[in-house]
Amino acid sequence: MKSYKITLLPGDGIGPEITNVTQKILDLVSRKFGFEIKFKEMPFGGSAIDSVGNPFPDKTLQECKNSDAVLLAAIGDPKYDELPREKRPETGLLNLRSSLELFANIRPVKIIPSLTKASSLKEEFVKNVDLVVVRELTSGIYFGEPKGSIKTEKGERAFNTMTYTSEEIKRIAEIAFKLAKQRNQKVCSVDKANVLDVSQLWREETILVSNKYKEIELTHQYVDNAAMQLVRNPSQFDVILTGNLFGDILSDIAAMLTGSIGMLPSASLTTNGPGVFEPVHGSAPDIAGKDIANPIAMLLSAAMMLKIAFNETQAANHLENAINEILNEGYRTSDLMSNQTTKQVGCSQMGELVAEKLK
Image (cartoon, rainbow, N blue to C red; front, side, top):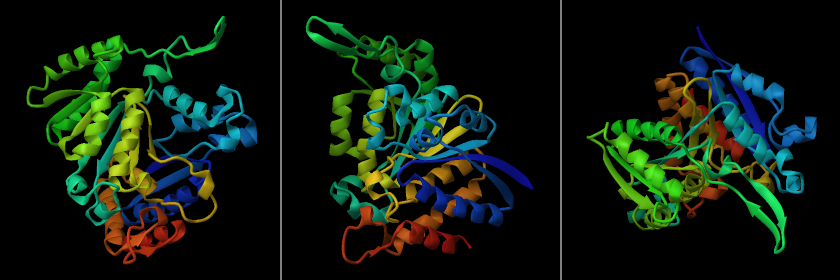
């Protein structure tokens, strides 16, 4: 029997709740399709700060490296905001990405027909949306040097550096073009080349990569226009290629096209080694422990993991179909409620409903 090792990082806020649901669902799916999953839960984020004083302990890193995939829920809580930057949960997340060299973040945004009315945009604008944001994840302004703050005659001066090398741009562009080749053969590269030198290099290198993919239509948009176009006409996009900062913002805008950020999965991948699969949403500490969180984004992240990391496509499709059936029957967590005909359920009950469909 095939066996896969998953490191679980429940993290903070609603993380443990949605992790619990997802682990149970994966146990069901693995038994049904004849493979085994071995889970190892490790501290990460705020929970790790509380237990060992470090958001990303060395033992957690080693377990991640020794696994076939990492399944991360969410990290963060305002109570850690007063800690030094290096001790905060978000720093642990950045260190996870850099330590595992997770340079490619893949965020699919596809409208589920039964949820078109849940979107904040009119149904006719979102019903055909099916796009993927390909975000560079280990460089750009989040990792660039120098960074910090200094004292000046005019007071404190803080600074960060946006930086990309040709090779960093080429390798993420390759991911985008290969993905577009499997989809609708369109790549829109998003930058700010009219202002930023680093974006000029981004555009030049992306064009060079595109020369190897003559069948792929390459277009360019400035980031401010791209944000507007995602709201004005989102169905124009197939694959959006962009850097770390712009991708962070645009993927959250794209998430809301679906009606809730609680619906979107993501995969962070490297050339060699385990990928990290996680929902796009945050830890939502204000609703933690209330059993009202939406577990679907993490369930769909698990489905991405089954496909990408394990090549268990049949199992992944079965899970996705079960989720679609539940939504078609009108079941919703509170973030998705749109009218009185839908039936509101909590986090654990949503998991139970999906589980019934999987049996």
